[in-house]
Image 1: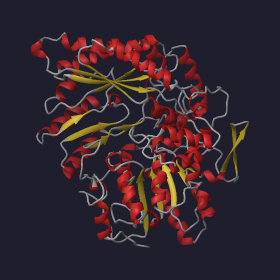
Image 2: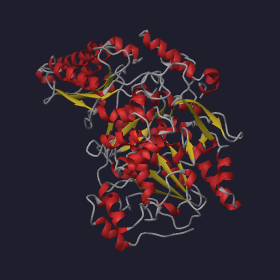
Image 3: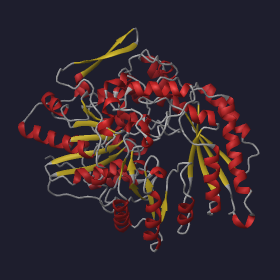
Image 4: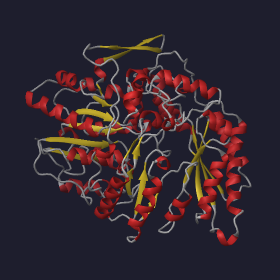
Length: 615
Protein backbone atom coordinates (compact mmCIF):
# COMPACT_ATOMS: atom_id res chain seq x y z
CA UNK A 1 0.00 0.00 0.00
CA UNK A 2 1.22 3.49 -0.84
CA UNK A 3 1.40 5.68 2.23
CA UNK A 4 2.13 9.12 0.87
CA UNK A 5 0.97 11.66 3.41
CA UNK A 6 0.99 15.41 3.51
CA UNK A 7 4.14 16.88 5.03
CA UNK A 8 3.28 18.43 8.45
CA UNK A 9 5.12 21.63 7.55
CA UNK A 10 3.09 21.96 4.34
CA UNK A 11 -0.10 21.24 6.28
CA UNK A 12 0.69 24.02 8.75
CA UNK A 13 1.20 26.46 5.89
CA UNK A 14 -2.11 25.46 4.32
CA UNK A 15 -3.98 25.77 7.61
CA UNK A 16 -2.56 29.25 8.18
CA UNK A 17 -4.35 30.40 5.02
CA UNK A 18 -7.88 29.22 5.82
CA UNK A 19 -10.67 30.63 7.93
CA UNK A 20 -11.49 27.41 9.82
CA UNK A 21 -8.45 25.12 10.07
CA UNK A 22 -10.35 22.75 12.39
CA UNK A 23 -12.20 21.50 9.31
CA UNK A 24 -9.04 19.77 8.10
CA UNK A 25 -6.93 18.68 11.07
CA UNK A 26 -8.71 15.47 12.12
CA UNK A 27 -7.73 13.90 15.47
CA UNK A 28 -11.23 14.36 16.85
CA UNK A 29 -12.34 12.51 19.95
CA UNK A 30 -13.21 8.91 18.95
CA UNK A 31 -11.44 9.14 15.59
CA UNK A 32 -10.36 5.67 14.45
CA UNK A 33 -6.67 5.07 13.88
CA UNK A 34 -5.24 1.90 12.35
CA UNK A 35 -1.65 0.81 11.84
CA UNK A 36 -2.32 -2.49 10.08
CA UNK A 37 -4.55 -2.61 7.01
CA UNK A 38 -4.48 -3.79 3.41
CA UNK A 39 -7.49 -1.93 2.01
CA UNK A 40 -8.31 1.76 2.13
CA UNK A 41 -11.73 3.36 1.68
CA UNK A 42 -12.09 7.15 1.47
CA UNK A 43 -15.55 8.16 2.68
CA UNK A 44 -16.21 11.51 1.01
CA UNK A 45 -18.93 14.04 1.73
CA UNK A 46 -19.23 16.77 -0.94
CA UNK A 47 -19.95 19.63 1.43
CA UNK A 48 -18.15 21.34 4.29
CA UNK A 49 -17.07 19.58 7.47
CA UNK A 50 -19.88 21.06 9.59
CA UNK A 51 -22.53 19.50 7.34
CA UNK A 52 -20.75 16.24 6.59
CA UNK A 53 -19.98 15.53 10.24
CA UNK A 54 -23.70 15.83 10.96
CA UNK A 55 -24.69 13.16 8.43
CA UNK A 56 -25.86 10.06 10.26
CA UNK A 57 -25.39 7.76 7.28
CA UNK A 58 -21.70 8.66 7.04
CA UNK A 59 -21.26 8.05 10.76
CA UNK A 60 -22.75 4.58 10.38
CA UNK A 61 -20.63 3.65 7.35
CA UNK A 62 -17.47 4.97 9.03
CA UNK A 63 -18.08 2.53 11.88
CA UNK A 64 -19.23 -0.40 9.71
CA UNK A 65 -16.30 -0.23 7.29
CA UNK A 66 -13.70 0.24 10.00
CA UNK A 67 -15.11 -2.81 11.80
CA UNK A 68 -13.92 -4.92 8.84
CA UNK A 69 -10.60 -6.65 9.41
CA UNK A 70 -7.81 -5.03 7.42
CA UNK A 71 -9.99 -2.17 6.13
CA UNK A 72 -9.25 1.45 6.99
CA UNK A 73 -12.03 3.92 6.25
CA UNK A 74 -10.97 7.56 6.34
CA UNK A 75 -12.96 10.76 5.86
CA UNK A 76 -12.72 13.65 3.45
CA UNK A 77 -15.02 16.66 3.15
CA UNK A 78 -15.30 19.26 0.42
CA UNK A 79 -12.75 21.98 1.11
CA UNK A 80 -14.12 25.48 1.44
CA UNK A 81 -13.06 27.90 -1.30
CA UNK A 82 -10.12 29.22 0.77
CA UNK A 83 -8.65 25.72 1.17
CA UNK A 84 -9.30 24.88 -2.50
CA UNK A 85 -7.34 28.00 -3.44
CA UNK A 86 -4.53 27.18 -0.98
CA UNK A 87 -4.19 23.60 -2.26
CA UNK A 88 -4.19 24.71 -5.88
CA UNK A 89 -1.58 27.43 -5.38
CA UNK A 90 0.66 25.10 -3.37
CA UNK A 91 0.30 22.28 -5.90
CA UNK A 92 -0.93 19.90 -3.20
CA UNK A 93 -3.60 17.19 -3.37
CA UNK A 94 -6.79 16.98 -1.32
CA UNK A 95 -6.24 14.74 1.70
CA UNK A 96 -8.12 12.67 4.26
CA UNK A 97 -8.47 13.73 7.88
CA UNK A 98 -7.17 10.53 9.46
CA UNK A 99 -3.75 10.10 7.78
CA UNK A 100 -3.55 13.20 5.53
CA UNK A 101 -3.31 10.88 2.49
CA UNK A 102 -4.35 11.92 -1.03
CA UNK A 103 -7.57 10.34 -2.33
CA UNK A 104 -5.76 8.86 -5.34
CA UNK A 105 -3.93 6.48 -2.97
CA UNK A 106 -7.12 4.73 -1.88
CA UNK A 107 -8.70 1.55 -3.24
CA UNK A 108 -12.23 2.97 -3.18
CA UNK A 109 -13.40 6.59 -3.01
CA UNK A 110 -17.07 6.75 -2.05
CA UNK A 111 -19.27 9.84 -2.17
CA UNK A 112 -22.48 10.37 -0.18
CA UNK A 113 -24.95 12.25 -2.40
CA UNK A 114 -27.66 13.83 -0.27
CA UNK A 115 -28.56 16.82 -2.38
CA UNK A 116 -28.35 17.60 -6.09
CA UNK A 117 -26.76 20.97 -5.41
CA UNK A 118 -23.56 19.31 -4.15
CA UNK A 119 -22.63 17.81 -7.54
CA UNK A 120 -20.08 20.49 -8.46
CA UNK A 121 -18.34 19.81 -5.13
CA UNK A 122 -17.79 16.21 -6.24
CA UNK A 123 -15.88 17.60 -9.22
CA UNK A 124 -13.88 19.89 -6.94
CA UNK A 125 -12.78 16.94 -4.83
CA UNK A 126 -11.86 14.82 -7.86
CA UNK A 127 -9.91 17.65 -9.51
CA UNK A 128 -7.96 18.42 -6.34
CA UNK A 129 -7.11 14.71 -6.16
CA UNK A 130 -5.82 14.45 -9.73
CA UNK A 131 -8.58 11.96 -10.59
CA UNK A 132 -10.31 12.28 -14.00
CA UNK A 133 -13.97 13.23 -13.83
CA UNK A 134 -15.34 10.55 -16.16
CA UNK A 135 -15.25 6.86 -15.32
CA UNK A 136 -14.37 6.10 -18.94
CA UNK A 137 -11.11 8.03 -18.50
CA UNK A 138 -9.95 6.07 -15.44
CA UNK A 139 -8.05 2.79 -15.66
CA UNK A 140 -6.93 0.38 -12.94
CA UNK A 141 -4.31 2.85 -11.66
CA UNK A 142 -7.06 5.02 -10.17
CA UNK A 143 -9.31 4.20 -7.21
CA UNK A 144 -12.78 2.84 -7.85
CA UNK A 145 -15.11 5.86 -7.61
CA UNK A 146 -18.56 5.03 -6.22
CA UNK A 147 -21.59 6.92 -4.90
CA UNK A 148 -24.56 6.27 -2.64
CA UNK A 149 -27.29 8.24 -0.91
CA UNK A 150 -30.81 9.42 -1.75
CA UNK A 151 -29.79 11.22 -4.96
CA UNK A 152 -28.95 7.88 -6.53
CA UNK A 153 -32.64 7.13 -7.00
CA UNK A 154 -32.05 9.11 -10.21
CA UNK A 155 -28.38 8.41 -10.90
CA UNK A 156 -28.44 9.49 -14.55
CA UNK A 157 -27.27 13.14 -14.37
CA UNK A 158 -24.05 12.02 -12.65
CA UNK A 159 -23.85 8.40 -13.84
CA UNK A 160 -20.85 8.92 -16.14
CA UNK A 161 -18.76 10.18 -13.19
CA UNK A 162 -18.94 6.93 -11.24
CA UNK A 163 -17.73 3.39 -11.74
CA UNK A 164 -20.56 2.05 -9.57
CA UNK A 165 -23.58 3.54 -7.85
CA UNK A 166 -25.08 2.01 -4.72
CA UNK A 167 -28.87 2.04 -4.43
CA UNK A 168 -30.45 1.95 -0.99
CA UNK A 169 -29.16 1.00 2.48
CA UNK A 170 -25.39 0.77 2.58
CA UNK A 171 -24.53 -1.15 5.76
CA UNK A 172 -24.38 -4.56 4.08
CA UNK A 173 -23.88 -3.47 0.48
CA UNK A 174 -20.73 -1.43 1.15
CA UNK A 175 -19.10 -4.36 2.91
CA UNK A 176 -19.90 -6.65 -0.02
CA UNK A 177 -18.48 -4.09 -2.43
CA UNK A 178 -15.25 -3.87 -0.41
CA UNK A 179 -14.84 -7.66 -0.31
CA UNK A 180 -15.49 -7.90 -4.06
CA UNK A 181 -12.90 -5.23 -4.90
CA UNK A 182 -10.47 -6.81 -2.45
CA UNK A 183 -10.81 -10.23 -4.09
CA UNK A 184 -10.50 -8.77 -7.58
CA UNK A 185 -7.24 -7.07 -6.63
CA UNK A 186 -5.83 -10.31 -5.23
CA UNK A 187 -6.75 -12.07 -8.46
CA UNK A 188 -5.34 -9.30 -10.63
CA UNK A 189 -8.63 -8.68 -12.47
CA UNK A 190 -8.86 -5.79 -14.88
CA UNK A 191 -11.42 -3.06 -14.38
CA UNK A 192 -14.08 -4.38 -16.81
CA UNK A 193 -14.00 -7.77 -15.06
CA UNK A 194 -14.29 -6.12 -11.66
CA UNK A 195 -17.29 -4.07 -12.78
CA UNK A 196 -19.05 -7.22 -13.98
CA UNK A 197 -18.60 -8.75 -10.53
CA UNK A 198 -19.86 -5.60 -8.85
CA UNK A 199 -23.02 -5.61 -10.97
CA UNK A 200 -23.89 -9.00 -9.45
CA UNK A 201 -24.25 -7.42 -5.99
CA UNK A 202 -27.87 -6.58 -5.21
CA UNK A 203 -28.21 -2.79 -5.15
CA UNK A 204 -25.16 -1.98 -7.30
CA UNK A 205 -25.69 -0.12 -10.58
CA UNK A 206 -22.75 0.01 -13.01
CA UNK A 207 -23.54 2.89 -15.41
CA UNK A 208 -21.06 1.83 -18.10
CA UNK A 209 -23.20 -1.24 -18.81
CA UNK A 210 -26.12 0.96 -19.89
CA UNK A 211 -26.62 3.57 -22.60
CA UNK A 212 -29.51 6.04 -22.82
CA UNK A 213 -31.19 6.56 -26.19
CA UNK A 214 -32.64 9.92 -27.29
CA UNK A 215 -34.89 10.87 -30.18
CA UNK A 216 -35.71 14.47 -31.12
CA UNK A 217 -34.07 15.70 -27.92
CA UNK A 218 -36.08 13.44 -25.59
CA UNK A 219 -35.10 10.35 -23.66
CA UNK A 220 -36.81 7.23 -25.06
CA UNK A 221 -35.13 4.20 -23.44
CA UNK A 222 -31.97 2.69 -21.98
CA UNK A 223 -30.03 -0.05 -23.73
CA UNK A 224 -27.97 -2.66 -21.90
CA UNK A 225 -24.46 -2.91 -23.30
CA UNK A 226 -23.71 -6.16 -21.44
CA UNK A 227 -26.41 -8.78 -21.27
CA UNK A 228 -25.22 -10.00 -17.88
CA UNK A 229 -26.15 -6.70 -16.23
CA UNK A 230 -29.52 -6.63 -14.45
CA UNK A 231 -32.29 -5.04 -16.52
CA UNK A 232 -33.19 -2.79 -13.59
CA UNK A 233 -30.75 -2.78 -10.64
CA UNK A 234 -32.84 -3.03 -7.48
CA UNK A 235 -32.64 -0.92 -4.33
CA UNK A 236 -31.06 -2.74 -1.40
CA UNK A 237 -32.71 -2.67 2.01
CA UNK A 238 -31.58 -3.76 5.45
CA UNK A 239 -34.35 -6.05 6.62
CA UNK A 240 -33.55 -6.20 10.35
CA UNK A 241 -32.67 -2.68 11.40
CA UNK A 242 -32.48 -3.59 15.08
CA UNK A 243 -29.65 -6.05 14.39
CA UNK A 244 -27.56 -3.78 12.14
CA UNK A 245 -24.38 -2.07 13.40
CA UNK A 246 -24.78 1.52 14.46
CA UNK A 247 -22.32 4.42 14.80
CA UNK A 248 -19.94 2.91 17.36
CA UNK A 249 -18.12 5.59 19.34
CA UNK A 250 -19.47 8.71 17.67
CA UNK A 251 -16.93 11.25 16.49
CA UNK A 252 -16.92 14.51 18.44
CA UNK A 253 -15.96 17.49 16.24
CA UNK A 254 -13.54 20.25 17.14
CA UNK A 255 -16.02 22.94 16.09
CA UNK A 256 -19.77 23.31 16.22
CA UNK A 257 -21.53 21.38 13.48
CA UNK A 258 -25.08 21.62 12.13
CA UNK A 259 -26.45 18.78 14.28
CA UNK A 260 -24.15 18.94 17.27
CA UNK A 261 -25.64 16.23 19.46
CA UNK A 262 -26.15 12.52 19.87
CA UNK A 263 -28.65 11.09 17.38
CA UNK A 264 -30.24 7.65 17.65
CA UNK A 265 -32.16 6.38 14.64
CA UNK A 266 -35.40 5.00 16.01
CA UNK A 267 -36.70 3.69 12.69
CA UNK A 268 -36.15 3.82 8.95
CA UNK A 269 -38.87 4.48 6.40
CA UNK A 270 -42.27 6.12 6.69
CA UNK A 271 -45.74 4.68 6.22
CA UNK A 272 -47.66 7.93 5.71
CA UNK A 273 -47.34 8.32 1.94
CA UNK A 274 -47.04 12.09 1.55
CA UNK A 275 -47.11 12.43 -2.22
CA UNK A 276 -44.35 15.06 -2.53
CA UNK A 277 -41.90 13.25 -0.25
CA UNK A 278 -39.22 11.28 -2.05
CA UNK A 279 -37.76 9.91 1.18
CA UNK A 280 -41.15 8.52 2.12
CA UNK A 281 -41.16 6.43 -1.07
CA UNK A 282 -37.50 5.40 -1.39
CA UNK A 283 -36.92 4.36 2.24
CA UNK A 284 -39.91 2.03 2.47
CA UNK A 285 -40.78 -0.25 4.20
CA UNK A 286 -40.85 0.90 7.83
CA UNK A 287 -38.34 -0.87 10.05
CA UNK A 288 -38.01 -0.08 13.75
CA UNK A 289 -35.44 -0.57 16.46
CA UNK A 290 -36.61 -1.93 19.80
CA UNK A 291 -36.79 0.60 22.61
CA UNK A 292 -34.26 -1.43 24.62
CA UNK A 293 -31.80 -1.13 21.75
CA UNK A 294 -32.36 2.62 21.54
CA UNK A 295 -31.92 3.10 25.29
CA UNK A 296 -28.66 1.16 25.18
CA UNK A 297 -27.40 3.16 22.19
CA UNK A 298 -28.33 6.49 23.79
CA UNK A 299 -26.54 5.62 27.03
CA UNK A 300 -23.40 4.51 25.23
CA UNK A 301 -23.30 7.51 22.90
CA UNK A 302 -23.71 10.00 25.75
CA UNK A 303 -21.01 8.16 27.71
CA UNK A 304 -18.46 8.20 24.88
CA UNK A 305 -19.13 11.75 23.63
CA UNK A 306 -20.19 13.92 26.58
CA UNK A 307 -23.05 15.48 24.61
CA UNK A 308 -25.95 16.91 26.62
CA UNK A 309 -28.68 16.32 24.04
CA UNK A 310 -30.11 13.16 22.49
CA UNK A 311 -32.17 13.46 19.33
CA UNK A 312 -34.59 10.72 18.31
CA UNK A 313 -34.05 10.55 14.58
CA UNK A 314 -36.33 9.29 11.80
CA UNK A 315 -38.53 10.59 8.99
CA UNK A 316 -41.47 10.67 11.41
CA UNK A 317 -40.46 9.99 15.00
CA UNK A 318 -44.01 10.59 16.22
CA UNK A 319 -45.01 7.39 14.39
CA UNK A 320 -42.56 5.16 16.27
CA UNK A 321 -44.77 2.47 17.78
CA UNK A 322 -43.09 2.52 21.21
CA UNK A 323 -42.52 6.27 21.45
CA UNK A 324 -44.76 6.80 24.48
CA UNK A 325 -42.90 4.06 26.35
CA UNK A 326 -39.47 5.14 25.11
CA UNK A 327 -39.66 8.87 25.87
CA UNK A 328 -40.35 8.67 29.62
CA UNK A 329 -37.68 6.01 30.06
CA UNK A 330 -34.98 7.77 28.08
CA UNK A 331 -35.74 11.12 29.74
CA UNK A 332 -35.57 9.57 33.21
CA UNK A 333 -32.38 7.78 32.20
CA UNK A 334 -30.72 11.01 31.08
CA UNK A 335 -32.12 13.49 33.61
CA UNK A 336 -29.45 12.96 36.27
CA UNK A 337 -26.80 13.91 33.70
CA UNK A 338 -28.81 16.96 32.61
CA UNK A 339 -29.12 15.49 29.12
CA UNK A 340 -32.17 16.61 27.19
CA UNK A 341 -34.18 14.67 24.62
CA UNK A 342 -35.42 16.26 21.40
CA UNK A 343 -37.69 15.22 18.57
CA UNK A 344 -36.49 16.93 15.37
CA UNK A 345 -39.89 16.98 13.67
CA UNK A 346 -43.25 15.95 15.07
CA UNK A 347 -46.34 14.59 13.41
CA UNK A 348 -49.14 17.06 13.99
CA UNK A 349 -51.55 14.24 14.82
CA UNK A 350 -49.19 12.52 17.26
CA UNK A 351 -50.64 12.34 20.77
CA UNK A 352 -47.67 13.81 22.62
CA UNK A 353 -49.13 15.89 25.45
CA UNK A 354 -47.71 13.78 28.27
CA UNK A 355 -44.43 13.35 26.41
CA UNK A 356 -44.03 17.11 25.92
CA UNK A 357 -44.60 17.76 29.60
CA UNK A 358 -41.99 15.14 30.42
CA UNK A 359 -39.49 16.55 27.91
CA UNK A 360 -39.53 20.05 29.36
CA UNK A 361 -38.50 18.84 32.84
CA UNK A 362 -34.87 18.71 31.67
CA UNK A 363 -34.56 21.44 29.05
CA UNK A 364 -36.89 22.60 26.32
CA UNK A 365 -35.49 22.23 22.81
CA UNK A 366 -37.16 23.51 19.68
CA UNK A 367 -40.43 22.08 18.41
CA UNK A 368 -41.07 21.72 14.71
CA UNK A 369 -44.30 20.75 12.98
CA UNK A 370 -44.84 20.31 9.26
CA UNK A 371 -48.39 21.09 8.10
CA UNK A 372 -46.85 21.49 4.58
CA UNK A 373 -49.97 23.27 3.23
CA UNK A 374 -52.33 25.97 4.45
CA UNK A 375 -55.74 24.48 3.57
CA UNK A 376 -57.36 21.12 4.09
CA UNK A 377 -57.94 20.65 0.38
CA UNK A 378 -54.22 21.10 -0.30
CA UNK A 379 -53.27 18.78 2.55
CA UNK A 380 -55.56 16.15 1.05
CA UNK A 381 -53.94 16.63 -2.37
CA UNK A 382 -50.51 15.89 -0.90
CA UNK A 383 -51.93 13.12 1.34
CA UNK A 384 -50.74 14.74 4.56
CA UNK A 385 -53.66 13.17 6.43
CA UNK A 386 -53.70 15.79 9.18
CA UNK A 387 -56.26 18.47 9.97
CA UNK A 388 -56.17 22.02 11.26
CA UNK A 389 -57.63 20.71 14.51
CA UNK A 390 -54.68 18.32 14.84
CA UNK A 391 -52.20 21.19 14.54
CA UNK A 392 -54.00 23.52 16.93
CA UNK A 393 -54.32 20.75 19.51
CA UNK A 394 -50.62 19.90 19.19
CA UNK A 395 -49.38 23.49 19.58
CA UNK A 396 -51.80 24.14 22.46
CA UNK A 397 -50.39 21.08 24.22
CA UNK A 398 -46.88 22.43 23.63
CA UNK A 399 -47.72 25.91 24.88
CA UNK A 400 -49.44 24.48 27.93
CA UNK A 401 -46.35 22.35 28.65
CA UNK A 402 -44.18 25.49 28.68
CA UNK A 403 -43.04 26.04 25.10
CA UNK A 404 -43.33 29.59 23.80
CA UNK A 405 -42.36 29.07 20.19
CA UNK A 406 -42.77 26.62 17.33
CA UNK A 407 -41.50 26.31 13.78
CA UNK A 408 -43.98 25.43 11.02
CA UNK A 409 -42.78 24.03 7.69
CA UNK A 410 -44.74 24.68 4.49
CA UNK A 411 -44.23 24.32 0.76
CA UNK A 412 -45.49 26.55 -2.02
CA UNK A 413 -45.80 25.70 -5.69
CA UNK A 414 -47.50 22.37 -5.06
CA UNK A 415 -49.63 20.80 -7.82
CA UNK A 416 -53.19 22.25 -8.04
CA UNK A 417 -52.23 25.08 -5.62
CA UNK A 418 -54.30 28.30 -5.63
CA UNK A 419 -53.84 31.69 -3.98
CA UNK A 420 -56.38 30.60 -1.38
CA UNK A 421 -53.96 27.88 -0.32
CA UNK A 422 -51.16 30.45 0.05
CA UNK A 423 -53.28 32.78 2.19
CA UNK A 424 -54.28 29.71 4.20
CA UNK A 425 -50.70 29.41 5.44
CA UNK A 426 -50.95 32.87 7.02
CA UNK A 427 -54.36 32.07 8.48
CA UNK A 428 -52.98 28.92 10.06
CA UNK A 429 -50.09 30.86 11.60
CA UNK A 430 -52.62 33.39 12.91
CA UNK A 431 -54.58 30.62 14.61
CA UNK A 432 -51.41 29.14 16.14
CA UNK A 433 -50.57 32.57 17.52
CA UNK A 434 -54.10 32.79 18.92
CA UNK A 435 -53.67 29.46 20.72
CA UNK A 436 -50.73 30.93 22.61
CA UNK A 437 -52.27 34.26 23.51
CA UNK A 438 -55.54 32.72 24.63
CA UNK A 439 -53.72 31.01 27.49
CA UNK A 440 -53.78 32.91 30.79
CA UNK A 441 -50.68 35.06 31.21
CA UNK A 442 -49.57 33.10 34.26
CA UNK A 443 -49.62 29.86 32.24
CA UNK A 444 -47.65 30.96 29.20
CA UNK A 445 -44.02 31.85 28.64
CA UNK A 446 -42.58 35.07 27.27
CA UNK A 447 -41.17 35.88 23.86
CA UNK A 448 -43.62 33.96 21.69
CA UNK A 449 -42.49 33.16 18.15
CA UNK A 450 -44.10 31.21 15.34
CA UNK A 451 -41.58 30.74 12.57
CA UNK A 452 -43.15 30.10 9.17
CA UNK A 453 -40.51 28.37 7.05
CA UNK A 454 -41.46 28.10 3.39
CA UNK A 455 -39.65 26.11 0.72
CA UNK A 456 -40.39 25.77 -2.98
CA UNK A 457 -41.86 22.48 -4.16
CA UNK A 458 -39.44 20.49 -6.30
CA UNK A 459 -40.90 17.56 -8.28
CA UNK A 460 -38.83 14.51 -7.41
CA UNK A 461 -38.43 11.15 -9.17
CA UNK A 462 -40.22 8.15 -7.65
CA UNK A 463 -43.00 10.27 -6.14
CA UNK A 464 -46.62 10.73 -7.13
CA UNK A 465 -45.70 14.23 -8.37
CA UNK A 466 -42.76 13.18 -10.55
CA UNK A 467 -44.62 14.16 -13.73
CA UNK A 468 -45.57 17.66 -12.54
CA UNK A 469 -44.00 20.93 -13.72
CA UNK A 470 -42.35 23.23 -11.25
CA UNK A 471 -43.69 26.75 -10.77
CA UNK A 472 -41.62 29.39 -12.54
CA UNK A 473 -39.42 31.71 -10.50
CA UNK A 474 -41.74 34.62 -11.25
CA UNK A 475 -44.74 32.69 -9.96
CA UNK A 476 -42.92 31.59 -6.81
CA UNK A 477 -41.83 35.15 -6.05
CA UNK A 478 -45.41 36.33 -6.53
CA UNK A 479 -46.65 33.69 -4.08
CA UNK A 480 -43.94 34.58 -1.56
CA UNK A 481 -45.00 38.22 -1.67
CA UNK A 482 -48.66 37.21 -1.30
CA UNK A 483 -47.79 35.23 1.81
CA UNK A 484 -45.64 38.02 3.24
CA UNK A 485 -48.55 40.43 2.88
CA UNK A 486 -51.03 37.96 4.38
CA UNK A 487 -48.80 37.43 7.45
CA UNK A 488 -48.82 41.11 8.39
CA UNK A 489 -50.43 41.59 11.75
CA UNK A 490 -49.90 37.99 12.94
CA UNK A 491 -48.43 38.36 16.43
CA UNK A 492 -45.01 36.73 16.78
CA UNK A 493 -44.88 35.56 13.15
CA UNK A 494 -41.56 35.36 11.34
CA UNK A 495 -41.30 34.32 7.69
CA UNK A 496 -38.34 32.46 6.18
CA UNK A 497 -38.44 31.79 2.42
CA UNK A 498 -35.88 29.64 0.62
CA UNK A 499 -34.42 31.18 -2.56
CA UNK A 500 -36.50 30.05 -5.53
CA UNK A 501 -33.63 30.22 -8.02
CA UNK A 502 -31.83 27.37 -6.22
CA UNK A 503 -34.94 25.22 -6.45
CA UNK A 504 -34.95 25.45 -10.25
CA UNK A 505 -31.51 23.88 -10.59
CA UNK A 506 -32.46 21.28 -8.00
CA UNK A 507 -35.50 20.38 -10.10
CA UNK A 508 -33.34 20.13 -13.23
CA UNK A 509 -30.92 17.63 -11.72
CA UNK A 510 -33.67 15.78 -9.83
CA UNK A 511 -35.36 14.75 -13.07
CA UNK A 512 -32.42 15.01 -15.44
CA UNK A 513 -30.65 12.57 -17.73
CA UNK A 514 -27.04 11.84 -18.71
CA UNK A 515 -26.78 14.86 -20.96
CA UNK A 516 -26.48 16.94 -17.81
CA UNK A 517 -23.05 15.53 -17.01
CA UNK A 518 -21.43 17.76 -19.63
CA UNK A 519 -23.45 20.72 -18.34
CA UNK A 520 -22.22 19.99 -14.83
CA UNK A 521 -18.57 19.83 -15.90
CA UNK A 522 -18.97 23.00 -17.98
CA UNK A 523 -20.51 24.87 -15.03
CA UNK A 524 -17.70 23.68 -12.76
CA UNK A 525 -15.11 24.95 -15.21
CA UNK A 526 -16.92 28.32 -15.12
CA UNK A 527 -16.36 28.50 -11.38
CA UNK A 528 -19.54 26.96 -9.94
CA UNK A 529 -19.03 25.58 -6.43
CA UNK A 530 -21.18 25.17 -3.32
CA UNK A 531 -24.35 25.80 -5.29
CA UNK A 532 -26.57 25.30 -2.24
CA UNK A 533 -24.88 28.31 -0.61
CA UNK A 534 -26.71 31.39 -1.88
CA UNK A 535 -23.59 33.58 -1.71
CA UNK A 536 -21.73 31.19 -4.04
CA UNK A 537 -24.51 30.29 -6.46
CA UNK A 538 -23.83 31.60 -9.97
CA UNK A 539 -27.02 31.48 -12.05
CA UNK A 540 -25.49 33.23 -15.06
CA UNK A 541 -22.67 30.70 -15.31
CA UNK A 542 -25.16 27.84 -15.06
CA UNK A 543 -27.30 29.38 -17.83
CA UNK A 544 -24.21 29.66 -20.04
CA UNK A 545 -23.28 26.04 -19.34
CA UNK A 546 -26.73 24.87 -20.45
CA UNK A 547 -26.60 27.02 -23.58
CA UNK A 548 -23.15 25.71 -24.46
CA UNK A 549 -24.59 22.19 -24.49
CA UNK A 550 -27.74 23.04 -26.41
CA UNK A 551 -30.02 22.47 -23.42
CA UNK A 552 -32.31 24.64 -21.27
CA UNK A 553 -33.30 24.49 -17.64
CA UNK A 554 -36.91 25.13 -18.63
CA UNK A 555 -37.12 21.80 -20.44
CA UNK A 556 -36.19 19.90 -17.28
CA UNK A 557 -37.86 22.02 -14.58
CA UNK A 558 -41.03 23.43 -16.13
CA UNK A 559 -42.15 20.79 -18.59
CA UNK A 560 -45.01 18.51 -17.54
CA UNK A 561 -44.30 14.85 -18.28
CA UNK A 562 -46.87 12.58 -19.87
CA UNK A 563 -47.89 9.70 -17.61
CA UNK A 564 -46.80 7.17 -20.22
CA UNK A 565 -43.56 8.94 -21.13
CA UNK A 566 -40.32 6.96 -20.55
CA UNK A 567 -38.39 8.48 -17.67
CA UNK A 568 -34.59 8.22 -17.38
CA UNK A 569 -34.59 7.21 -13.71
CA UNK A 570 -36.68 4.12 -14.45
CA UNK A 571 -33.41 2.39 -15.33
CA UNK A 572 -33.17 1.60 -11.61
CA UNK A 573 -35.77 -0.10 -9.43
CA UNK A 574 -36.48 1.56 -6.07
CA UNK A 575 -39.16 -1.10 -5.32
CA UNK A 576 -42.09 1.35 -5.40
CA UNK A 577 -43.88 0.71 -8.70
CA UNK A 578 -44.77 3.24 -11.39
CA UNK A 579 -48.31 1.84 -11.46
CA UNK A 580 -48.74 2.73 -7.79
CA UNK A 581 -47.39 6.25 -8.34
CA UNK A 582 -49.86 6.76 -11.18
CA UNK A 583 -52.74 5.72 -8.91
CA UNK A 584 -51.54 8.16 -6.28
CA UNK A 585 -51.32 10.98 -8.83
CA UNK A 586 -54.91 10.31 -9.90
CA UNK A 587 -56.07 10.39 -6.28
CA UNK A 588 -54.16 13.65 -5.77
CA UNK A 589 -56.00 15.33 -8.64
CA UNK A 590 -59.24 14.29 -6.96
CA UNK A 591 -58.01 15.46 -3.50
CA UNK A 592 -58.52 11.91 -2.20
CA UNK A 593 -56.29 10.61 0.56
CA UNK A 594 -54.67 7.20 0.88
CA UNK A 595 -54.50 5.47 4.23
CA UNK A 596 -51.33 4.91 6.23
CA UNK A 597 -49.87 1.61 5.03
CA UNK A 598 -49.64 0.41 8.64
CA UNK A 599 -53.43 0.31 8.54
CA UNK A 600 -53.36 -2.04 5.54
CA UNK A 601 -51.23 -2.65 2.47
CA UNK A 602 -51.71 -0.13 -0.34
CA UNK A 603 -49.76 -2.22 -2.87
CA UNK A 604 -46.88 0.20 -3.41
CA UNK A 605 -44.43 -2.62 -4.19
CA UNK A 606 -46.88 -4.46 -6.44
CA UNK A 607 -46.51 -8.24 -6.30
CA UNK A 608 -43.49 -7.85 -4.00
CA UNK A 609 -45.55 -6.35 -1.16
CA UNK A 610 -46.20 -9.72 0.46
CA UNK A 611 -42.48 -10.25 0.92
CA UNK A 612 -41.46 -6.76 2.04
CA UNK A 613 -44.49 -6.00 4.19
CA UNK A 614 -43.63 -8.94 6.43
CA UNK A 615 -40.41 -7.25 7.54
